[in-house]
Amino acid sequence: MNVTPRKRTVASCTVLALALGAGTTACGGQDSHPLSARPYDAARQVAFNAPPSGTKADPDKPLVVTAKGKDGRITDVTAVDTAGRYLAGELSANGARWRSTGPLAAGTRYTVRVSTENGGGAPGVRTLTFETASPKRLLGVELGPKTGTYGVGQPITAELSRPVATKADRAAVERSLKVTSTPEVEGAWHWVDDKKLHYRPKQYWPAGASVEVHSTLDGVKVGDRLYGGPTKPLELTIGDRVEAITDASTHQMTVKRNGEVIKTMPVTTGKPGFSTRNGVKVVLGKEYFVRMRGTSIGIPVGSAESYDLPVYYATRVTWSGEYVHAAPWSVGSQGYANVSHGCTGMSTGNAAWFFKTVREGDIVKVVNSLGARMDPFGNGFGDWNLEWDEWRSGSALLEGTRDGGSAADGARLRPRV
Image (cartoon, rainbow, N blue to C red; front, side, top):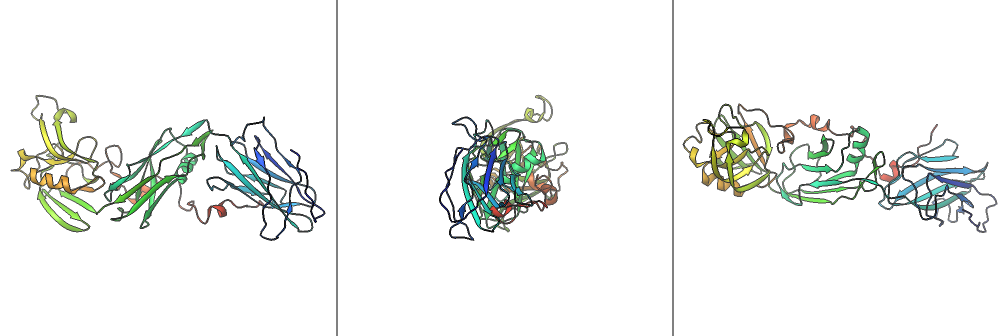
Protein backbone atom coordinates (compact mmCIF):
# COMPACT_ATOMS: atom_id res chain seq x y z
CA MET A 1 0.00 0.00 0.00
CA ASN A 2 1.44 3.40 -0.98
CA VAL A 3 1.10 6.35 1.31
CA THR A 4 1.74 9.85 -0.02
CA PRO A 5 4.10 11.69 2.35
CA ARG A 6 2.97 14.93 3.93
CA LYS A 7 5.17 18.00 4.04
CA ARG A 8 7.20 18.02 7.23
CA THR A 9 10.01 20.01 8.79
CA VAL A 10 12.02 16.91 9.75
CA ALA A 11 14.49 15.94 7.04
CA SER A 12 14.56 12.18 7.71
CA CYS A 13 12.06 9.64 8.88
CA THR A 14 11.79 6.04 9.93
CA VAL A 15 10.00 3.70 7.57
CA LEU A 16 7.89 1.04 9.25
CA ALA A 17 6.64 -2.21 7.88
CA LEU A 18 3.71 -3.84 9.60
CA ALA A 19 3.51 -7.51 8.68
CA LEU A 20 0.47 -9.58 9.55
CA GLY A 21 -0.16 -13.18 8.58
CA ALA A 22 -3.38 -11.91 6.98
CA GLY A 23 -4.13 -8.35 6.01
CA THR A 24 -5.67 -5.38 7.71
CA THR A 25 -8.66 -3.44 6.59
CA ALA A 26 -7.66 0.12 7.36
CA CYS A 27 -4.77 2.29 8.42
CA GLY A 28 -3.96 5.92 8.93
CA GLY A 29 -4.38 8.86 11.21
CA GLN A 30 -1.69 10.69 13.18
CA ASP A 31 -1.80 10.89 16.93
CA SER A 32 -0.22 13.21 19.48
CA HIS A 33 3.00 12.22 21.23
CA PRO A 34 3.65 13.00 24.89
CA LEU A 35 7.13 14.39 24.09
CA SER A 36 6.26 16.64 21.18
CA ALA A 37 3.38 18.84 20.14
CA ARG A 38 4.01 17.97 16.47
CA PRO A 39 5.56 14.51 16.07
CA TYR A 40 6.34 13.64 12.51
CA ASP A 41 4.49 10.89 10.66
CA ALA A 42 6.68 7.85 11.31
CA ALA A 43 5.73 5.97 8.14
CA ARG A 44 5.69 7.22 4.57
CA GLN A 45 5.13 3.62 3.59
CA VAL A 46 3.32 0.92 5.55
CA ALA A 47 3.60 -2.51 3.95
CA PHE A 48 0.96 -5.15 4.59
CA ASN A 49 1.09 -8.76 3.61
CA ALA A 50 -2.39 -8.16 2.32
CA PRO A 51 -5.01 -10.86 1.81
CA PRO A 52 -7.63 -10.71 -0.95
CA SER A 53 -9.90 -7.70 -0.83
CA GLY A 54 -12.68 -7.87 1.77
CA THR A 55 -10.97 -10.40 4.02
CA LYS A 56 -9.62 -9.78 7.50
CA ALA A 57 -6.47 -10.56 9.43
CA ASP A 58 -5.95 -14.09 10.72
CA PRO A 59 -5.91 -13.82 14.54
CA ASP A 60 -3.67 -16.90 14.73
CA LYS A 61 -0.82 -14.95 13.07
CA PRO A 62 1.41 -12.63 15.12
CA LEU A 63 1.58 -8.88 14.69
CA VAL A 64 5.05 -7.67 13.68
CA VAL A 65 6.30 -4.09 13.39
CA THR A 66 9.72 -3.45 11.82
CA ALA A 67 11.70 -0.22 11.59
CA LYS A 68 13.47 0.22 8.25
CA GLY A 69 16.39 2.52 7.71
CA LYS A 70 19.73 2.90 9.43
CA ASP A 71 18.91 5.82 11.68
CA GLY A 72 15.43 5.01 13.02
CA ARG A 73 14.26 2.85 15.90
CA ILE A 74 10.96 1.88 17.50
CA THR A 75 10.52 3.21 21.02
CA ASP A 76 7.03 1.98 21.86
CA VAL A 77 4.13 -0.06 20.46
CA THR A 78 0.69 -0.25 22.01
CA ALA A 79 -2.06 -2.40 20.45
CA VAL A 80 -5.55 -2.43 21.96
CA ASP A 81 -8.82 -3.89 20.71
CA THR A 82 -12.34 -2.49 20.94
CA ALA A 83 -12.92 -4.27 24.27
CA GLY A 84 -9.93 -2.45 25.80
CA ARG A 85 -7.68 -5.53 25.85
CA TYR A 86 -4.00 -4.82 25.30
CA LEU A 87 -1.86 -7.06 23.12
CA ALA A 88 1.39 -8.13 24.77
CA GLY A 89 4.60 -7.89 22.75
CA GLU A 90 8.40 -7.71 22.86
CA LEU A 91 10.76 -5.14 21.39
CA SER A 92 14.24 -6.09 20.27
CA ALA A 93 17.11 -4.47 22.14
CA ASN A 94 18.06 -2.29 19.16
CA GLY A 95 14.49 -1.13 18.58
CA ALA A 96 14.40 -2.60 15.08
CA ARG A 97 11.51 -5.04 15.56
CA TRP A 98 8.43 -5.52 17.70
CA ARG A 99 6.46 -8.77 17.73
CA SER A 100 3.29 -9.69 19.58
CA THR A 101 3.77 -12.41 22.19
CA GLY A 102 0.12 -12.85 23.12
CA PRO A 103 -2.62 -14.12 20.81
CA LEU A 104 -4.76 -11.60 18.98
CA ALA A 105 -8.46 -11.56 19.76
CA ALA A 106 -10.80 -12.71 17.01
CA GLY A 107 -13.66 -10.72 15.51
CA THR A 108 -12.50 -7.33 16.72
CA ARG A 109 -10.73 -4.15 15.59
CA TYR A 110 -7.26 -3.22 16.82
CA THR A 111 -5.75 0.22 17.10
CA VAL A 112 -1.96 0.09 16.99
CA ARG A 113 0.14 3.09 18.04
CA VAL A 114 3.80 2.96 17.01
CA SER A 115 6.25 5.52 18.44
CA THR A 116 9.70 6.01 16.95
CA GLU A 117 12.68 8.31 16.98
CA ASN A 118 15.17 9.07 14.26
CA GLY A 119 18.96 9.34 14.50
CA GLY A 120 18.66 12.90 15.77
CA GLY A 121 16.24 11.91 18.53
CA ALA A 122 13.18 13.45 16.89
CA PRO A 123 10.03 11.53 17.87
CA GLY A 124 7.54 10.09 15.41
CA VAL A 125 4.20 8.39 15.79
CA ARG A 126 1.96 6.27 13.59
CA THR A 127 -1.53 4.96 14.38
CA LEU A 128 -2.87 2.01 12.43
CA THR A 129 -6.13 0.07 12.63
CA PHE A 130 -7.04 -3.39 11.41
CA GLU A 131 -9.74 -6.00 11.95
CA THR A 132 -9.36 -9.67 12.75
CA ALA A 133 -11.52 -12.45 11.34
CA SER A 134 -14.34 -13.96 13.37
CA PRO A 135 -13.64 -17.32 15.01
CA LYS A 136 -14.93 -20.54 13.49
CA ARG A 137 -14.89 -22.49 16.78
CA LEU A 138 -16.46 -20.84 19.81
CA LEU A 139 -16.24 -21.70 23.49
CA GLY A 140 -19.49 -20.78 25.21
CA VAL A 141 -19.78 -20.12 28.96
CA GLU A 142 -23.00 -20.30 30.96
CA LEU A 143 -22.77 -18.69 34.38
CA GLY A 144 -24.90 -19.81 37.31
CA PRO A 145 -26.99 -19.65 39.32
CA LYS A 146 -29.69 -17.41 37.87
CA THR A 147 -29.70 -13.77 38.89
CA GLY A 148 -31.37 -13.43 42.29
CA THR A 149 -30.89 -13.53 46.06
CA TYR A 150 -29.03 -16.45 47.65
CA GLY A 151 -27.54 -17.60 50.92
CA VAL A 152 -23.95 -17.07 52.01
CA GLY A 153 -22.86 -20.53 50.85
CA GLN A 154 -23.90 -20.24 47.21
CA PRO A 155 -21.02 -21.03 44.83
CA ILE A 156 -20.84 -19.49 41.36
CA THR A 157 -20.68 -21.95 38.49
CA ALA A 158 -19.34 -21.71 34.94
CA GLU A 159 -20.39 -24.39 32.43
CA LEU A 160 -18.30 -24.58 29.25
CA SER A 161 -19.64 -25.72 25.89
CA ARG A 162 -16.42 -27.60 25.09
CA PRO A 163 -13.83 -29.36 27.24
CA VAL A 164 -10.71 -27.40 28.18
CA ALA A 165 -7.95 -29.68 29.43
CA THR A 166 -4.51 -28.07 29.36
CA LYS A 167 -3.33 -25.76 32.12
CA ALA A 168 -2.48 -22.96 29.68
CA ASP A 169 -5.93 -23.08 28.07
CA ARG A 170 -7.63 -23.25 31.45
CA ALA A 171 -5.64 -20.23 32.59
CA ALA A 172 -6.90 -18.28 29.57
CA VAL A 173 -10.49 -19.12 30.53
CA GLU A 174 -9.99 -18.41 34.20
CA ARG A 175 -8.37 -15.01 33.65
CA SER A 176 -11.42 -13.98 31.63
CA LEU A 177 -14.02 -14.91 34.25
CA LYS A 178 -14.33 -11.91 36.54
CA VAL A 179 -16.02 -11.95 39.95
CA THR A 180 -16.38 -8.77 41.98
CA SER A 181 -18.20 -8.32 45.27
CA THR A 182 -19.15 -5.48 47.56
CA PRO A 183 -17.72 -5.74 50.16
CA GLU A 184 -14.61 -7.19 48.53
CA VAL A 185 -13.62 -10.75 49.50
CA GLU A 186 -10.86 -13.15 48.58
CA GLY A 187 -12.04 -15.93 46.29
CA ALA A 188 -10.91 -18.34 43.57
CA TRP A 189 -12.11 -20.57 40.76
CA HIS A 190 -11.74 -24.34 41.06
CA TRP A 191 -11.86 -26.67 38.04
CA VAL A 192 -14.33 -29.45 38.82
CA ASP A 193 -13.68 -31.12 35.45
CA ASP A 194 -12.81 -30.15 31.87
CA LYS A 195 -16.13 -28.34 31.34
CA LYS A 196 -17.08 -26.99 34.77
CA LEU A 197 -15.66 -24.45 37.24
CA HIS A 198 -16.91 -23.33 40.64
CA TYR A 199 -16.05 -20.06 42.38
CA ARG A 200 -16.30 -19.46 46.12
CA PRO A 201 -14.79 -17.04 48.62
CA LYS A 202 -12.23 -18.15 51.18
CA GLN A 203 -15.02 -17.90 53.74
CA TYR A 204 -18.78 -17.60 53.30
CA TRP A 205 -20.06 -14.56 51.41
CA PRO A 206 -20.73 -11.60 53.71
CA ALA A 207 -24.42 -11.15 54.49
CA GLY A 208 -25.90 -8.44 52.28
CA ALA A 209 -23.09 -8.56 49.73
CA SER A 210 -23.57 -7.74 46.05
CA VAL A 211 -21.80 -10.03 43.59
CA GLU A 212 -21.24 -9.41 39.89
CA VAL A 213 -19.87 -11.98 37.46
CA HIS A 214 -18.94 -11.33 33.85
CA SER A 215 -16.69 -12.72 31.17
CA THR A 216 -14.12 -11.00 28.97
CA LEU A 217 -13.60 -14.22 27.03
CA ASP A 218 -15.36 -13.02 23.87
CA GLY A 219 -12.79 -13.21 21.06
CA VAL A 220 -9.99 -14.46 23.34
CA LYS A 221 -7.95 -17.40 22.08
CA VAL A 222 -8.35 -20.42 24.33
CA GLY A 223 -6.83 -23.29 22.36
CA ASP A 224 -6.01 -24.35 18.83
CA ARG A 225 -8.25 -22.09 16.74
CA LEU A 226 -10.76 -22.01 19.63
CA TYR A 227 -11.97 -18.62 20.83
CA GLY A 228 -14.31 -17.49 23.55
CA GLY A 229 -17.83 -16.42 22.72
CA PRO A 230 -20.15 -13.87 24.35
CA THR A 231 -21.40 -14.62 27.88
CA LYS A 232 -24.45 -13.26 29.68
CA PRO A 233 -23.35 -11.52 32.92
CA LEU A 234 -24.70 -12.44 36.33
CA GLU A 235 -25.67 -10.43 39.40
CA LEU A 236 -26.36 -11.93 42.81
CA THR A 237 -27.52 -10.48 46.11
CA ILE A 238 -26.50 -12.33 49.26
CA GLY A 239 -29.11 -12.52 52.01
CA ASP A 240 -28.73 -13.05 55.75
CA ARG A 241 -26.25 -15.62 57.01
CA VAL A 242 -28.59 -18.52 57.76
CA GLU A 243 -26.98 -21.74 59.04
CA ALA A 244 -28.69 -24.93 60.15
CA ILE A 245 -26.40 -27.22 62.19
CA THR A 246 -27.66 -30.74 62.87
CA ASP A 247 -25.91 -32.78 65.56
CA ALA A 248 -26.69 -36.41 64.74
CA SER A 249 -25.51 -37.54 68.19
CA THR A 250 -27.87 -35.26 70.13
CA HIS A 251 -30.63 -35.36 67.50
CA GLN A 252 -31.02 -31.58 67.52
CA MET A 253 -30.93 -28.94 64.80
CA THR A 254 -29.85 -25.41 65.68
CA VAL A 255 -30.69 -22.64 63.23
CA LYS A 256 -28.80 -19.35 63.32
CA ARG A 257 -29.36 -16.08 61.53
CA ASN A 258 -26.33 -13.78 61.37
CA GLY A 259 -24.75 -15.66 64.28
CA GLU A 260 -27.81 -15.56 66.57
CA VAL A 261 -29.73 -18.75 67.42
CA ILE A 262 -33.32 -18.35 66.22
CA LYS A 263 -34.64 -21.90 66.73
CA THR A 264 -33.63 -25.31 68.07
CA MET A 265 -35.62 -28.36 66.97
CA PRO A 266 -35.60 -32.11 67.68
CA VAL A 267 -34.77 -34.15 64.57
CA THR A 268 -33.91 -37.62 63.42
CA THR A 269 -31.18 -38.47 60.93
CA GLY A 270 -29.99 -41.58 59.11
CA LYS A 271 -29.95 -44.88 60.98
CA PRO A 272 -27.01 -47.31 60.77
CA GLY A 273 -26.51 -48.38 57.19
CA PHE A 274 -28.16 -45.16 55.97
CA SER A 275 -26.23 -42.63 58.04
CA THR A 276 -26.57 -38.98 56.97
CA ARG A 277 -23.54 -37.42 55.29
CA ASN A 278 -21.35 -35.27 57.53
CA GLY A 279 -20.14 -31.85 56.48
CA VAL A 280 -21.40 -28.68 54.90
CA LYS A 281 -24.16 -28.76 52.30
CA VAL A 282 -25.96 -25.94 50.56
CA VAL A 283 -29.71 -25.63 50.02
CA LEU A 284 -30.38 -26.55 46.37
CA GLY A 285 -34.12 -25.90 46.27
CA LYS A 286 -37.44 -26.36 48.02
CA GLU A 287 -40.33 -28.66 47.05
CA TYR A 288 -43.66 -28.49 48.89
CA PHE A 289 -44.48 -32.11 47.98
CA VAL A 290 -42.20 -35.01 47.03
CA ARG A 291 -43.02 -38.70 46.63
CA MET A 292 -40.13 -40.58 48.21
CA ARG A 293 -39.51 -44.20 47.24
CA GLY A 294 -36.87 -46.58 48.55
CA THR A 295 -36.10 -47.70 45.00
CA SER A 296 -34.49 -44.26 44.39
CA ILE A 297 -31.64 -45.22 46.73
CA GLY A 298 -31.43 -48.87 45.73
CA ILE A 299 -33.88 -50.45 48.19
CA PRO A 300 -35.89 -53.15 46.40
CA VAL A 301 -39.68 -53.18 46.61
CA GLY A 302 -40.94 -55.61 49.22
CA SER A 303 -37.81 -55.61 51.36
CA ALA A 304 -37.89 -54.78 55.06
CA GLU A 305 -36.49 -51.30 54.33
CA SER A 306 -38.82 -50.54 51.42
CA TYR A 307 -40.89 -47.36 51.60
CA ASP A 308 -43.16 -45.22 49.42
CA LEU A 309 -44.21 -42.03 51.22
CA PRO A 310 -45.78 -38.63 50.46
CA VAL A 311 -43.44 -36.00 51.93
CA TYR A 312 -44.18 -32.32 52.53
CA TYR A 313 -42.02 -29.24 53.11
CA ALA A 314 -38.96 -30.87 51.54
CA THR A 315 -35.77 -28.78 51.40
CA ARG A 316 -33.23 -30.44 49.09
CA VAL A 317 -29.52 -30.51 49.98
CA THR A 318 -28.18 -33.21 47.59
CA TRP A 319 -29.12 -34.23 44.06
CA SER A 320 -29.29 -37.87 45.13
CA GLY A 321 -32.27 -37.14 47.35
CA GLU A 322 -31.17 -35.98 50.79
CA TYR A 323 -33.71 -33.53 52.21
CA VAL A 324 -34.72 -31.77 55.37
CA HIS A 325 -38.44 -32.55 55.49
CA ALA A 326 -41.56 -33.23 57.49
CA ALA A 327 -41.61 -36.75 58.95
CA PRO A 328 -44.75 -37.02 61.12
CA TRP A 329 -44.36 -40.83 61.27
CA SER A 330 -41.10 -40.49 63.26
CA VAL A 331 -42.07 -37.75 65.74
CA GLY A 332 -41.66 -40.19 68.63
CA SER A 333 -37.99 -40.74 67.68
CA GLN A 334 -37.14 -37.13 66.93
CA GLY A 335 -34.76 -35.82 69.55
CA TYR A 336 -33.97 -39.38 70.72
CA ALA A 337 -32.91 -41.69 67.90
CA ASN A 338 -31.82 -41.80 64.28
CA VAL A 339 -34.36 -43.77 62.26
CA SER A 340 -34.41 -42.23 58.75
CA HIS A 341 -32.90 -43.47 55.52
CA GLY A 342 -30.51 -40.51 55.36
CA CYS A 343 -32.72 -37.44 55.41
CA THR A 344 -33.19 -35.10 58.36
CA GLY A 345 -36.77 -35.52 59.59
CA MET A 346 -38.78 -33.25 61.85
CA SER A 347 -42.36 -32.49 62.75
CA THR A 348 -44.62 -31.00 60.11
CA GLY A 349 -44.76 -27.68 61.95
CA ASN A 350 -40.99 -27.42 62.28
CA ALA A 351 -40.49 -28.50 58.67
CA ALA A 352 -42.92 -25.79 57.49
CA TRP A 353 -41.01 -23.19 59.52
CA PHE A 354 -37.67 -24.38 58.12
CA PHE A 355 -39.07 -24.42 54.58
CA LYS A 356 -40.21 -20.82 54.96
CA THR A 357 -37.00 -19.63 56.66
CA VAL A 358 -34.25 -20.89 54.33
CA ARG A 359 -33.42 -20.03 50.73
CA GLU A 360 -31.11 -21.46 48.06
CA GLY A 361 -27.50 -21.06 49.09
CA ASP A 362 -28.11 -21.27 52.83
CA ILE A 363 -25.88 -23.58 54.87
CA VAL A 364 -27.02 -26.97 56.18
CA LYS A 365 -24.27 -28.65 58.20
CA VAL A 366 -24.31 -32.12 59.77
CA VAL A 367 -21.89 -33.10 62.53
CA ASN A 368 -21.27 -36.27 64.55
CA SER A 369 -22.95 -38.60 62.10
CA LEU A 370 -21.57 -42.04 61.31
CA GLY A 371 -21.98 -41.27 57.61
CA ALA A 372 -19.28 -40.42 55.08
CA ARG A 373 -18.22 -36.85 54.46
CA MET A 374 -20.18 -34.88 51.88
CA ASP A 375 -18.47 -35.01 48.49
CA PRO A 376 -17.19 -31.60 47.31
CA PHE A 377 -18.72 -32.02 43.84
CA GLY A 378 -21.21 -34.11 41.93
CA ASN A 379 -24.02 -34.40 44.48
CA GLY A 380 -24.85 -30.80 45.19
CA PHE A 381 -22.60 -28.09 46.53
CA GLY A 382 -20.10 -29.60 48.92
CA ASP A 383 -17.52 -26.97 47.97
CA TRP A 384 -17.07 -25.78 51.54
CA ASN A 385 -15.74 -29.18 52.65
CA LEU A 386 -12.40 -28.40 50.98
CA GLU A 387 -9.84 -26.40 52.95
CA TRP A 388 -8.84 -23.14 51.29
CA ASP A 389 -5.39 -24.33 50.20
CA GLU A 390 -6.94 -27.42 48.64
CA TRP A 391 -9.57 -25.31 46.93
CA ARG A 392 -6.95 -22.91 45.59
CA SER A 393 -4.94 -25.81 44.16
CA GLY A 394 -7.82 -26.42 41.74
CA SER A 395 -7.15 -23.10 40.04
CA ALA A 396 -5.14 -22.97 36.82
CA LEU A 397 -3.59 -19.68 37.94
CA LEU A 398 -0.66 -19.97 40.31
CA GLU A 399 -0.10 -17.50 43.11
CA GLY A 400 1.97 -14.62 41.79
CA THR A 401 0.51 -14.81 38.29
CA ARG A 402 -2.60 -12.85 39.12
CA ASP A 403 -2.96 -9.63 37.17
CA GLY A 404 -1.14 -6.77 38.78
CA GLY A 405 -1.10 -3.13 37.78
CA SER A 406 -3.08 -1.78 34.86
CA ALA A 407 -3.88 -3.73 31.73
CA ALA A 408 -1.71 -1.33 29.73
CA ASP A 409 1.27 -1.89 32.03
CA GLY A 410 0.95 -5.63 31.58
CA ALA A 411 1.12 -5.28 27.81
CA ARG A 412 3.86 -2.67 27.54
CA LEU A 413 7.13 -3.37 25.83
CA ARG A 414 9.51 -5.79 27.46
CA PRO A 415 12.84 -5.26 25.59
CA ARG A 416 14.97 -8.36 25.04
CA VAL A 417 18.60 -8.09 26.14
